[in-house]
Image (cartoon, rainbow, N blue to C red; front, side, top):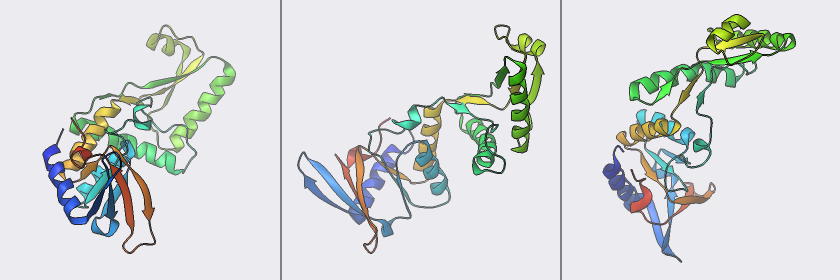
Length: 232
């Protein structure tokens, strides 16, 4: 893992500068972070929080990531299909359609650059009746409207040639659909962020945020300051 010792030093530095710590029953510590003392506080070290940390820290922002668990990506981000979607199904001109198509290409490029395990395996959406074939044609048009330019409707003969065990009257082929090692992606995001001096605090949770304070105050509870950096 990148920058562990650096992050420990950074946590201590930030703790000495802007945290007020006091003992709680059970040897826990509550830290009050004055939000005016750092550029960005990210709550949650799942894939979205880590991606934000990577992007913001690379832009020169001072970033602290707070996570209730003792490691990155232990909840929703570790319970997904690990599919890189092509962007077929979303309504035309929607943000989901736009971000899926643009983000798909950015994600493939990032994985190649950082050595994250992935594979552009493609996907077949199979029609087993003439009625379902009409649905495939509608999906083809929707995908094209969203900017998915490599979709192709294939015949039953082409389908059998590609996948002999599948029976259908036609299929929609999506070559840009893929799979990814989601944990490897999160580790890469964390490593990039730590190299840019972002710090990670885990094994605790945000209790509340006082927006009426000047500057605003976020209160978080951690078991140990030195355990705030995630282990390898």
